[in-house]
Each structure stands twice: as C-alpha cells, then as structure tokens.
Length: 71
Image (cartoon, rainbow, N blue to C red; front, side, top):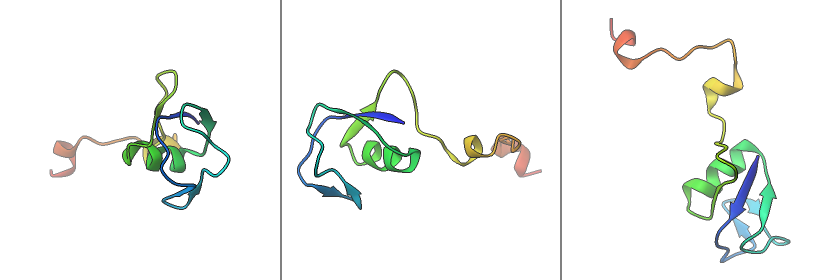
C-alpha cells in the first residue's frame, strides 16, 4: 500500500523503520503499517487508496450492520 510520508521526527515510529525515508516521499508499506502511520498523523493515503480492515482481508466475510447484530 502506498502512503505519502508527510512528516518524520524519528527513524523508528511505532515499530516501523523509517531510517531510509524522508518526509515528502511515497512509501510502499503493508496495510498494517499504513494504518499505523496514517492514524498517528505521519502519512496520508496516495491516490485515494485506503488501508485494509479485517473485512477486506477476508472477501467471503460480509459486514453486518450493527442494527442487524442486535436482533
């Protein structure tokens, strides 16, 4: 998954090695790392992509609306 690194204050951020990256670069990282970097405000999605969530990782699993789960 591609993310745009918008800021970098350390070489290691939440266990993700960014020692070779510079702010402003586009990085190809795992969906997990993309989620972390974006949630922490270090990066943003590239090209309108979004990180995967658990439902996306299992295409046969369908999301059930919360209201349906309570019945």
